[in-house]
Amino acid sequence: MNPMTDTFGLDRGLAQLSDLAPKGYALGLHIRFASAHLLLQTYDPRWTEIYTERGYMLADPMVFWGFGNDGAIRWSSIQLPDPHDIFGQARGFGLNYGVAVSLGPTSSRTIGGFARDDREFEDREIEKIQKIVAQLHAASEPPEQLTAAQRMALRLIAKGNRHAEAAAMLGISESALKARLRAARERLFVRTTAEAIQRAQEYKLL
Image (cartoon, rainbow, N blue to C red; front, side, top):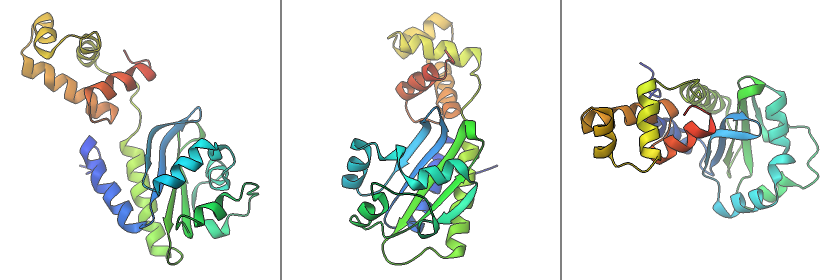
């Protein structure tokens, strides 16, 4: 069994990425309509705030490269315009060397940036990062549907019913209801029921 197919298996992969990219990373999994199914960031929060406030994703050469290419490339090898000097500004926060990784269909793209402050990434490190990103991409595939039981359990909680009330309405035990909610969370790759409800609504699964 793939160790990343359950929700909490994500932690292992992310811990490995943190070890490989000591100055942090930004990873958008399954980007659809300019929004990621999961967005994970560990860069310096000050840089993340500047990047977000100024809308740099729309002008980031790394992101442009990611949408047009499959594979991996060192930031220093990306030959695309950078009119806002995004790479230069990032270096001010220790993101001196980096690698971009991109995979998946254009309709559900995964793009990540990984940084160091001391040296370029070695080929073997890039290969490890690519492998982990591919595993995370596969494990976090947004579901096309939930089971009828999972949908009903989420709907009742979304309406404000407590677990005991929802279980009684469904004619099942409270533990059975919790099992359905847990299965829905795992299917939606989230940690809380509130997140599961929000994601299910976003993907029109309820």
